[in-house]
Structure formats: structure tokens, C-alpha cells
Image (cartoon, rainbow, N blue to C red; front, side):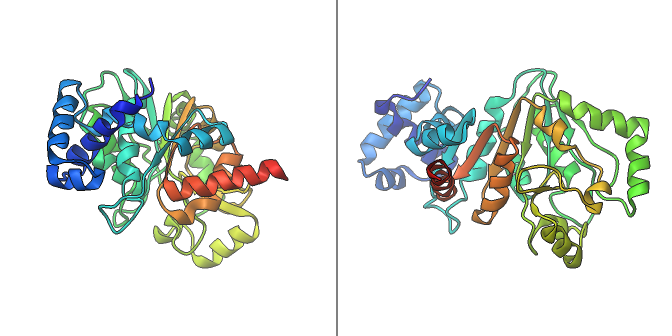
Length: 319
């Protein structure tokens, strides 16, 4: 149910006070209201149960820009996080909004597929603790070496811990040294069963990686810069769960992908709810590729990215 206009300021006050930890006088300055009004709104928030952002995420779905983007991209739901005034990074609120959107999409007994990376781990780190019965959190791709931060197994198990859920790790490397070895490992019954089970998930959480020198597949050592150049020359546009996709959102036909232990694109697309969260502005082109491939049903982005996507969608309709 949409938030009534008269109640929006209550949700905004609760968002600033409870999620950002602002004092009441700081909330008053931010909203250009009196401190007495802030106290009254926070009291109403407590009385109606709005004491965390969980009840206020509807603010970001009701935003005009979110609804315009939802219609333009034909998505089930879009949330637009406002530019943060409390951090040097204007997109700092994206993972916080996404963490609570994600919680709201989980149902009891659900199977949840989780990818990896800084955005996903930040979402996990900012999630409130919940006790959801019968939930299973499934790792979408193989793992990385111990020195790398935000590993797939860490993201999976941290989300499982926050939900008091069962975590199901994929005990295989993300990338093998040869295509033959990767094919043999994917054929192993335990690995095959785990990969086949991904399409039975009810919800997936992932971000989109870039294909530049800052890409996580470069930083984790999965590819070197020379191979990255070859991938880009072959049409690489983004990375999802370690898998390189082209501009149409399809799995790129390349040796790297054939050495991969990860969900395939068809299995990912079979998951009914696919929550994509993009924080960095540098991910505009990869996000376009994911959208072109129908890999996203639910989207959380910052205001700047939302405006770029809307301009792109409108330009496409005009040509």
C-alpha cells in the first residue's frame, strides 16, 4: 500500500533518526521543521511501528522517479535511494535501502540465491537480524582464494546468519585452470545437484560487475588484464556471479566462461524474483546489459543512476 502524502514526513523522520542515527535537532534541520515536530513524528512512528527503515522502504518505491523507471523498464518494482547528505559518497544509502527491500521480499521457507562482491557483502552487513523459518541461502557460484574480500561463501553465510537460515555453500573454485577440468567438476553429482538446484530458488540477490581494470574478476585473480582485453574485444559487457555477459545479457561464448563453476544464465532467469542492486555509477553499461537480458525483476539504484536509466529508456522509445 502506498504511503499517504501526509505520512511521508513521518517515514522520513524515522529514516534519518533510526537508520542514520541523527539527533532530533539534526533531523529538524534536514527536514526544515521544528524540533518539537520531529519529536511528535517520532512518537507517531513508534506508535505505528515505524521504527526502522523496513517500514519506510515504500518511500523509495513511491518516489516519482522510481515509478517512472518501473514503467519504462517493465520491472516488477524499483526503489530509488536518495542522494545521501550524510556521507562523502552520494550513493551510500543504496545498500541500506537494498538490505531492507531484500528482507521484505523473503518469505518463510524460501530458497534464496546469493552472489558476491562488495555491494552484496555491504547489504549483508547492514541487514537487520530476522528469524525466518525454513529459509535456505544458496551460493550462486564457486569460491575464491582466502585473501580476497567479499568472497561468495562469506556473502552467503553472513546473510544466512542474519536470517537464522540454513546456508548452502558451493564447495568448488569459481574458475578452473582448464575447460576440461571445469567440465569434469560440473559433472560431479554433488556439484551438478547444487548447480541444478539454483533454478528452484524463489529469490536471487546480486549486483553487476564491470569489465574494466577495477573489475572484481580481475582483482580476485580470475582473469588478468590481457584476458580481460580479449573478453572486451569479444563483446563482454558485464559480470554476474562471476559469469561474463555480453550486451544482450547472454553468457559470452568464451574460454573463461567455460572454465567457470557458476549458475548459468537460464537458471538465473528461471528464479521468479531477481533483485539487482547497483551502487556505483560506473556500472551503467553492465546494468543495461543485465536489463536487456531480462535478468532483473526488482531493482535498487541511486538517484543519479535512475535518471540515467530513465533518459536511456526514453531515448530508446524515440528512436
